[in-house]
Image (cartoon, rainbow, N blue to C red; front, side):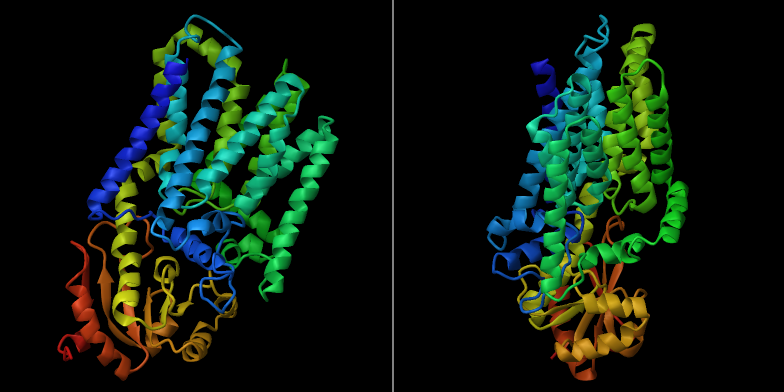
Length: 523
């Protein structure tokens, strides 16, 4: 079995290595993450290391949806190795996740041994399919905290399975139950049912202690944000979740539940939730297993009520991982019977087909990761390069991550992720007036934004041109970023810089000047 696990691990690491090689090849030797959001964390971590919480020195902001992740990056943020830390951490925790997959599959297969089931080929196939089905490799290259989130959630599921089998709650189970929501707030959907499970299973001291520690940690971070003059929840969560920004409005949650059922990923999760409910009610099952099934089903239901989906297949992945591992374990007897009756080839084919049909977005992520990285390389990285190497003054952007990383000049965020004032203006529908005031206060004379998103800004400023991708759009929102100047003086000063910059763009990317600027003097 050890040899079989090593085979799975080598396949996983081979997949990671192949993605790294493809990224370096397509980006001319530059390792770039697939989402600009990764650089928001790095920018924040860089300033945390300086003793400040925010992407701009001297101005507090809460652009990270994770409490812990930026602090994990902070010790080496800003160093030559700083950008590699998310990759290294994600690979390490993902190896841990693969190991936990192997343990769950091993227990599921071991309970109902047959000659066929005892073969190492079946566990090897199932774990390999789980790696694909949970987007494990794709998550690594987002450079974000989701790999750690999936590891912690998988550890929770494994701990609950162990408790349901022997009645013992291992001391380490409390750690992921507390840490998971500190890595991503939405992990409360699995931690809260998990704590309730422990309480109902008479591990009340452990459950109450963990609940108190978790509550104090969440309250403490909110108090820290309020002390900085910010809202108690990060601006990034307020921007990306209507349910959160509404304060948990019940009517909005019901509407969100309907939206979940209309979402392809949400509808599949709902089907899995029903399967878990059926497994919980099926006859002959131990009370602990029934409670375990209800626990995971309630977590799925909570996500359907308030959770998000997509954005390069990462928001729902934690609860999807928990649910399919639980179904695999709880359905182990039926799986064993099917193996004995139909053989490993038929079951393997059916399992593979199921993954293809239910996890196609994750397979697409696996296939498009190099292109997604190239999108960020050709767009946000080039914006940062122009800002730092050519313009060297305050700028305004709608993707604040890469442009603010390693950039001590002020970066005005117009999307509201790193600016509570921008977020309030967006909610009021008053972006144009706020932007005019903020740009003057911070001496911002150049904006690099998606004009269609911020028409009030685009209509008032002078368009200089557009930075275009050279390949298919995968992980950025628009194919082109538009450059705007506040006044003619800025436009005339920026044009020669842009001409020099355009000559250094990576292969495929291009800068096109608007008609009124094509004949502008170069100096």
